[in-house]
Image (cartoon, rainbow, N blue to C red; front, side, top):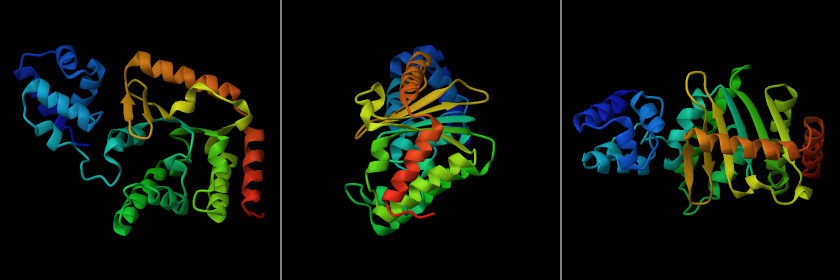
Length: 264
């Protein structure tokens, strides 16, 4: 991401005689978020950009020229994707689907194909390629460190059919057995737990504070408030403490893959 956007934001803020804190208060954002955008470390969401335009009286400039507007990923995920590419540690929680960076091509196509309104064939192809491109961060054998906490429902729902599910589950198993991924399953017998409200991604970085990304049916948000990120980390840790150990998690995943027809 070029930092022209962040530099222009800083110039407009200073021309308006505002500190980062003053702009944050006018735009209903945190000062740290403003600082990260100006430094080129974050991309604001479209809603954030609109509020910045209103606070600075810049019309729709910041909204119209968001970096990554032509990205094939969903608009609400653009900022989170940028962070994902910088992270040195990523901890995923998945309630319904396998996390995007762990999806196989056929599984990703089934998930993206279930969107409403439906995507055209060309748009679907473009989004599948973009999702698979995200998984390239796993080609580095060391960083980012990736953990995946999966609700057992993720394994039970036959997305794309039995063959696709068997392939997808074994893809995660092999990543875990190779040491590239640490994975745990939250058994259905657990009942209710705090993370059940939405999916969650926690991210740590080499040169900036941790961040989090949560996503539900209609709402997605990057969290960078230290207090909120710490709260989400604590909720993740509580759920992790209730999960099956790695060995038992992998055994359960292999059993589910065999249920779907996988054979050694």
